[in-house]
Image (cartoon, rainbow, N blue to C red; front, top):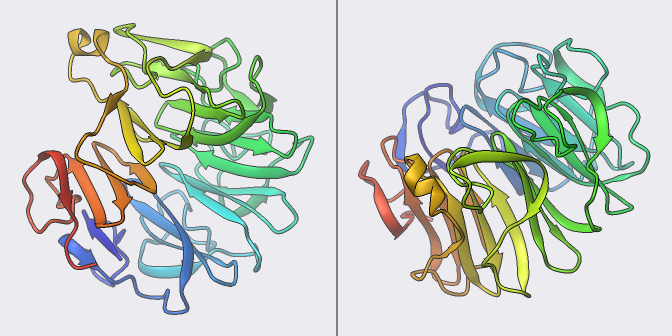
Length: 327
């Protein structure tokens, strides 16, 4: 079920009419195990490991060989079944296949498909030259990062804000290892930043920091190499989620978020803040200007709500979490 803006059919209900409450996606009746969405399209992993996507498709990001938008879920071509993970970026998407290879599709103006060139593709193409099997991945805005079986992180694509983590701002058309990282257990990519959880429980981030999304008081100065996020619990960090300009982490059932500052002064004070209204959270996700978390009492969302993306039946912004209705 999806809710919010639907200008490109990204809610998947067969229409382009927005909804401030959840509506059912058409074409996923067989059941799903995972979802990944960007601003204008969404992808799902079905129970048999098939990837289906819907919404905007001007760059071929639905992966079905066309550039025609779809308001219902359509199969991504040539991936087959048994896919392990899918991630939707702004205008491209990537997946890990059953053989632990990475395939990407959609726009490729900054090399985000990892094929060694800037040619877009409306069907999945294999990422080149990864030295080990893929374990997890996340697609950002014009770049992609993946965790390999040896717990290293490799990134490629746009690097204008240092979001590849390799110490400079030059883009890469194929993957390059992020240096100076301890072995990682989790990875997330935002619009122009990325973060990981290392196996010893430390959170490191790199890239843009214009709203404090790296968790450090630098008033918009980013970092082209990984730096630790301060003021987080020293243990129990379970997962991490990056959005457009903010990041949230889940630690022992508590949600900590940072970034999203509206001016330089706020960014200077930016750092992880515990969301005190949420207890026993098991999952967290960050969108463009809003976030959501799952708890034993339901799904809760907060932030911008002009398009009804908080799912509470209104279009009023909420600074604290509200319960999504109709689930």
